[in-house]
Length: 220
Ligand SMILES: *[C@@H]1O[C@H](CO)[C@@H](O)[C@H](O)[C@H]1NC(C)=O
Ligand SMILES: *[C@@H]1O[C@H](CO)[C@@H](O)[C@H](O)[C@H]1NC(C)=O
Image (cartoon, rainbow, N blue to C red; front, side, top):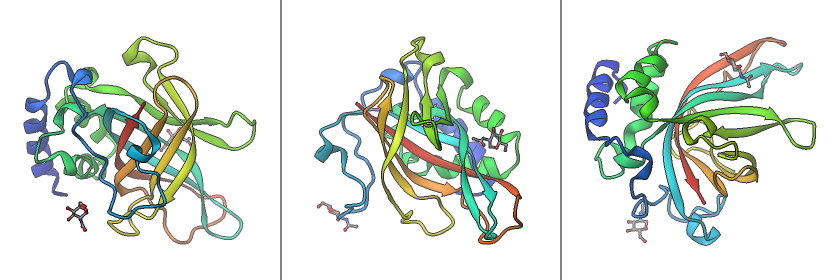
């Protein structure tokens, strides 16, 4: 699935499957792909929340190199594309692989993904970091305000749980992020991650932006 040519062909197939009413697809039958016995993240059924959107995120995880010669987290920036309508596709569990193959292909890949997935029609919003409400540190934000034409269609979240990616150490952690501000969702889970991990060692002061893709599941 990591071969770019195959990925592009698959994306055309995906785009054909997506209906124009992308944000209104029924996602009630989809279940978050947590490994059996997961306790590090609270499963949505246990949290009493309901799935509203599934997105694939494509972007970068940023790191700055500290005095100890190891990378410290410095936020991320990603575009979020609606895959809620692709839930029944056999490719659904692999969409992040396709996105990641494009990311590896270079910085223009985001535009390619945008085009093959149908551009603005499928773009739900952006994921980025802002100063935490406490005034120190950074917090993840998921911003759908443009697509939804609503100033409250965002989630500013705090990490409620994390676990190592079941796929191995090259992939960023799976996360549960709970809402702190905004009306978009009560919790957001980052799962099916690909890439995004920094090098093990670095030169102090160095900055690193590592391509990644992941699925983000939004629960209300
Ligand atoms: C996880 O649990 C489900 C239902 O209890 C079961 O059908 C499935 O085989 C289990 N998967 C693994 C990998 O153990
Ligand atoms: C992350 O790095 C990218 C460049 O690769 C930059 O555009 C973006 O603003 C950075 N975001 C943060 C939160 O540092």
